[in-house]
Image (cartoon, rainbow, N blue to C red; front, top):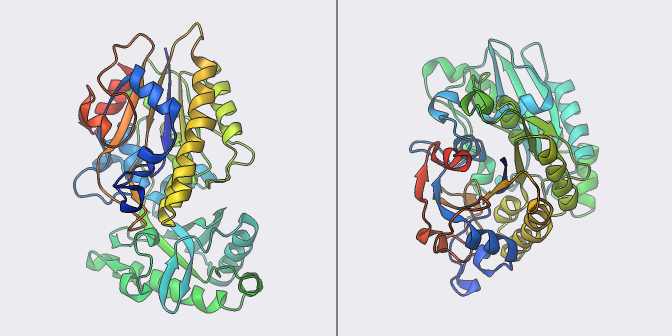
Length: 402
């Protein structure tokens, strides 16, 4: 048996009045997800344990069976693994967004989805101006970058910028949770303010403003941590000998690397609605021919939710169905070695609030020969009738592999 998890990041939502009280998944035309739900079994999964914020780092680690209470060490250290940056003892890593601030308010978390080339130039500039023996900026993709601080204390209260659009940035700056972390908090807040001074009239931003685009005029560090200690999936589930992760997002790649999965890059994969869906599907099929397990991640629905764009979110869900789920199912359905397929989001991202929320997500698992349950279509409410009921912690991944 081979296994694939297809994850539509942030795909779940709430009932939206403009959609007649339906969710984007309910409105979207998703014949393949509905077909797999009807042939398989469904349920709900709590991906965010009590006491944790509903970030993708927590949700994805949790659904892969990790106890985040002991294994999670911040988003930055996970992304560092994908970027090839080694986190040494005594170093603290943080995700470092480049964001847009307008009139003192956080306008968006992505500087208008700044290009890799523009963002790279800005990060290299900031590292030249603000980097030191103890502070280092590492270039990532689009708005997602890495900040490493030697001697940093991780006990900080940091607000993810995608959770607070429209909020005065000064109201959500970094705070120390313990007295020993105060120096780290002060240094990070100094870097934020200094970055705003340096980026205000940078040529990249002047050009973006002239062409009507949002300037990338501030850094925003968050999710601090040290190097995590994680067992691989192969150590936890001996039946899985090999596996791959396919994503355009460093966070997901990093989780996969720590989980013992090979990270597969796909040309044209962007993490947005215009990603190379066909290339990702082809890569997943190719990896399934060679590996026991594939974790295929699509970011587009989450980004649409953060933008509050309901119509775009519906389209990204339909793209996932027709350009990912469908081609993979059609390719593997007659293989000599059976393939178990699961589809789910990691967390809901509400278009109304433009943020992640801590609610259970709908999932389907199709195994050739499985006795179907009563669910006939896939959405947030239909799965309540599913035979898996409500799962949490490592129960989903165990159900997948059992």
